[in-house]
Length: 229
Ligand SMILES: [Zn+2]
Image 1: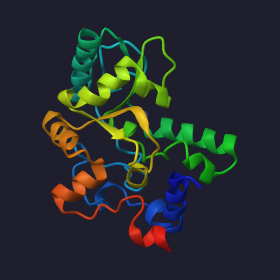
Image 2: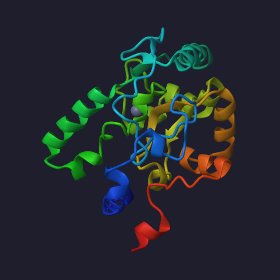
Image 3: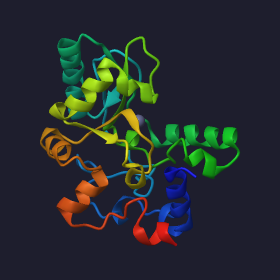
Image 4: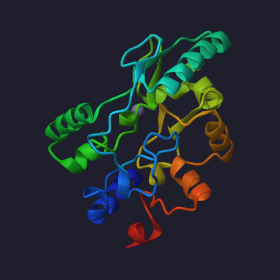
């Protein structure tokens, strides 16, 4: 069993915790509009959370993001082009709760079970894309949203430089147990420049970083107690 599947079954075993998941108010964080609001398979936002977004002026599709993130994305795309010659494209930015719900239900149908679907698609309310702060990056004329994006010029540059624009690479190799996601070199999350620099230097998943700076217990996907029994 892969670590991720193990983690997911551990979470499912913790049932109430994950699935009757509290909405914003119950999460150990209080500012859903803040740059550091944590959202993952456990900490969800309600279907009523709809951020203000605008279209980022970059090439690609689904370009909506919250205004600060959109502005940062525009600068990042321009810098990537200037520094590497490669053109980044947006693949997927803001997704509403309803859209995520649709993607998830389709996956459940296709795979035959929620457990299977959970391996691929976040449940509605559990995707960072609903915050308007996440973007899936691609490189023009490459096939994107695969691990091979990490080996493209744009992908390598993004891993080293996206922090300069306020983005972090949210799902890195070796962090699967904490983030609940496989390696996704294309998925960046806006946290603001100051935070991004600190998180990049700390080289930690957002969950672990927040736990450290806030002293809050943000139960990570797999805690010792859950996985070991
Ligand atoms: Zn994504």
